Length: 157
Image 1 (tube, one colour):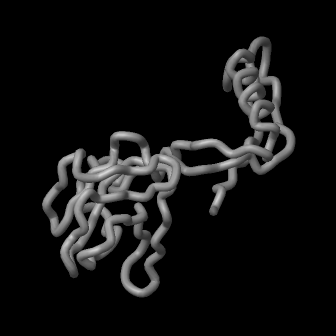
Image 2 (cartoon, rainbow, N blue to C red):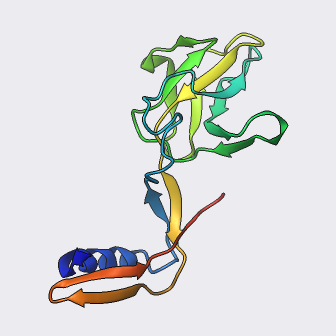
């Protein structure tokens, strides 16, 4: 149950995005870290690439599952200032790399040597949009209401 003012905030947010027309960043409370929800991200959480002595750009990703059936989810909305990078387990100084907050691409200042493992730890948001053109709202009582349904869908690029 929410106050009518809180319901009004949801309506304003929904209308500002024109329903399902425009996306936004969403912090999924169940999946927003490179590690388990109760842990602190570490530079070795997720493998994001292998050095070849020339390449310096690597895409953030999070692995779900293991082995041949694992899914590597692209992370395109890292939280600014949260990304930690390691090369062969050695954490890099923040000045040794840049992260594009709108794409999740990491650019290292120096190309890692061949066969070196590049890994990362991070927080991230999920790009989503509303999956409805109207909100399903209900009044619960005097000055109180709730959203019966406000479905979101991830935007995959």
